[in-house]
Length: 223
Image (cartoon, rainbow, N blue to C red; front, side, top):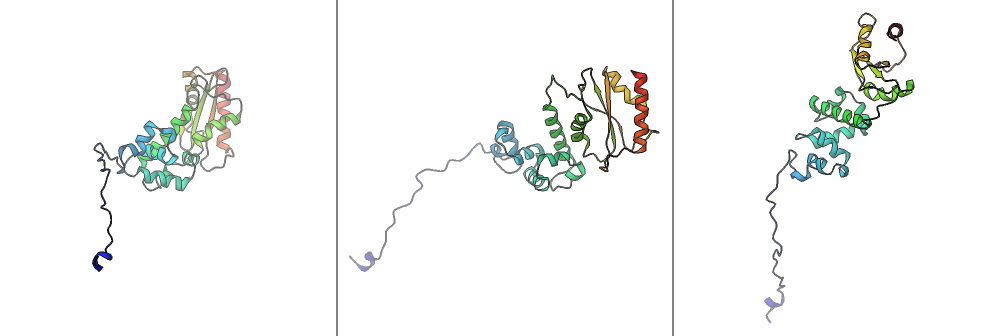
């Protein structure tokens, strides 16, 4: 055996025993992922196994949906915080424009409505019950709004709260008759009138007190 043969190390021949399988049905989504891996596909077929970020991305859609969902959770942390955020706050998040902010608001409102049984509308027996129902709807609003809640004889809400006025409220712009119109249409036995303060100070203003007294007097005539 020569010195050349002594120093030579022979390696076995390498070959790929299993050929690579070409995925012929590959269809990339808008994010560049295979279709089956996109948030929209996963949320459509297996929503219960999706992460919160994936579900948000499915709501947002578009090429920046995954990044937008990530930034939303980075800034607001919880879904409850996202639901309370104003549209102006949402559109400050990278990748979230007015249309996507509207999609988020719509999805949250649908989730809220589906949580109420069809055959059992909310029962309002106290101011606390009314507050629990209305704070998620009005607590984050940037403008003053006045809502009317028509109730049946069991103090259950008939339909959805109805917005009657938007903007600064005072006795010069609020027509008492408009407050009772939704109740008459719904054949309601009673109503609750609710008004938010975007400033966060819930102390009734003199205008609030005057308008409330006018509503009470008109209600006595109605009853």
